Length: 232
Image 1 (cartoon, one colour):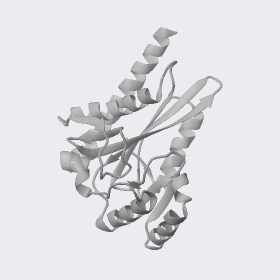
Image 2 (cartoon, rainbow, N blue to C red):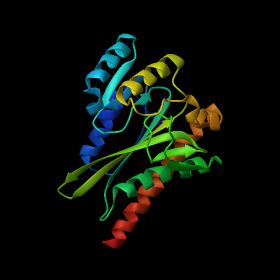
Image 3 (cartoon, one colour):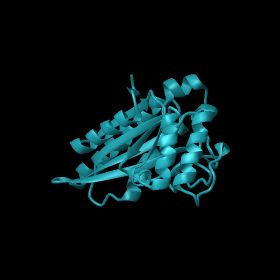
């Protein structure tokens, strides 16, 4: 099976961290069985956020923290995750990393005649300049984590692809936690999102899309490695 199943988002995040620690080129496409909201540890430590987190946990929805920054992301059946780990070539920048993973997604989508580009999307969760947008709506968010080794830097590039919106109860809890964490940010709007299931038939995004995504990721990692070997 192409998509690795994890019981929880915490398990998927831990596997990504292990791949980053190993420091070798790797790909991981994964999904969590349990629904949860994932947010940065720094935000989770805020007093106002903690009270909302406790209410959400009492309601039965998991809350998971991560080491990277950004906003709050729903995990579970509604989200497909792609992690790309690569030893960074000389001169490789943060922007190069975002271009690489966003380019991977846009290439995979183009194979299904879906045009995508990058940009911010006010009203979307975990908004940022390196969203992958279909039209002007958010389909995926991206993030990076880097570490230094004796042989150079290693990057973990991550994309969270929205398959469908969380169920209404979880969406409401996402909005409450977002408001507590980012009181000055725009209110989250469902219509600011372009879930994959709305862009292609469900059976296609469950079977054909993961394969196209892995092939696009492999092509980019291979091309990057070839250029590095030629430069050496």
